[in-house]
Amino acid sequence: MAASRPNFAIRFGFLIGLGLCASLPAAAREAAMKLPNAQVEALDFAALAGWADDDHAAAYATFLKSCSAILKGGKAMRAARPVYGALFKVCERTKAVGQLGGEQARAFFEDNFKPVRIAPPGQTQGFYTGYYETEFVGSRVPTDEFKVPIYAAPAETVRKRKSKVFAHFDRTAIENGALKGKKLEICYVKNPVDVFFAQIQGSTRVKLDSGQLLRLNYVASNGQRYTPVGKFLIDRGIIAKEDMSMDRIRDWMDANPEEGRELRRKNRSFVFFRETALAPHDECIGAQGIPLTAGRSLAVDRKIHVYGTPIWVDAELPILSEKPDTKFRRLLFAQDTGSAIIGSARADIYFGAGEEIGHIAGRIKQYGQFVMLVPRSVAVNGNGVAPSQDIPLPQPRPKAIIADAVPTTTVSAREAAPLPKPRR
Image (cartoon, rainbow, N blue to C red; front, side, top):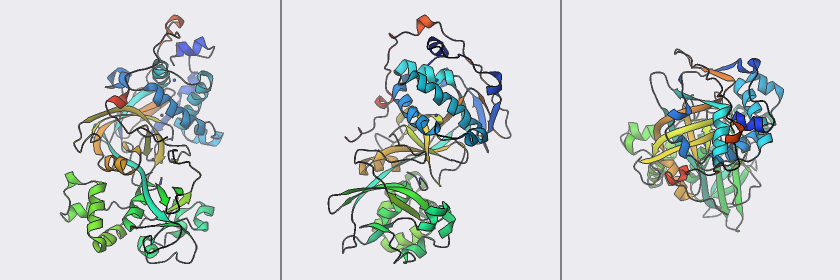
């Protein structure tokens, strides 16, 4: 998970076949949302390159995870945020249809959502980075080898649910011992660079010298603003902008420990962790409170986007090599957040866990199409541009077309952008 992670419905003919209502009441179509500093453009699904080739069954399974959290939301949340309320209704429909095959899942998304392209004013694309779950070795107690602590949050921070409680302790103060003696050390690792990157990602696995595997997740921060340190290396001419990546930053810090420490301290933000009960094969938990899905989960600006929102990503990314020439076209879901993720068309793609995955995630910094799938009952407006027009619901298809014989698989997007298989 990134820094603050520490982070969207079957044709209506099919719904009719299940005895459900195929249309939305007029009152349900009055909700509207406004995206700040963004221009929006209504699209048709036919305009989404690669849409038909995505693994919609896999996307739908990820959406069901979000629905499990959305359906727990109260009336106040549904009333305060139009998209949340609309997603709640879409998720209620999933209870009637259950798990779906490829074509049925695709139809579900097309009938319940409308695609709206989002970009900063005057631009046509959003911006993507990648993140992952770090993995290190460590110890429960300090040793000559393991000296760098990973901290739990001070009790006041968690109890009051306000990061700013410890805002007067910046990274420098904490690294200089401000929390010493408070018994907040969860474990110790070898390298301060490891802790720094674990804090940026928001979760980590620590294999203890005893053989135990700790799963740690973001729980709070000190409330200080997150500052990307790569900019300082670019400004000093140490790393060219086009060559910037997490690997390059890490290599420089390792090669220059004293200067690396001072560079890290330019980012005053400091992240605290908590132990989780996750099994070794489980994915880490995102800000929505559900397990993330590699290649399907996104971290977004939580002040703008509602968790569970589907977002169609179309970009060329450096996945198979350092060149951004791997087509990545698939439906992902807003399930996480991060303090560095700011803006309507900005997102961080979750790629999984481990060192190799980290190499991939660390070099993602590309522009691409950012298409939000908005519940059809919600109108979306940008600021300073013409609002997108509400797209009418499609006409229900004849029941005869909705048959069990509908193919349940499609060409998987993973063939275009393969990811390592999940650990078992």
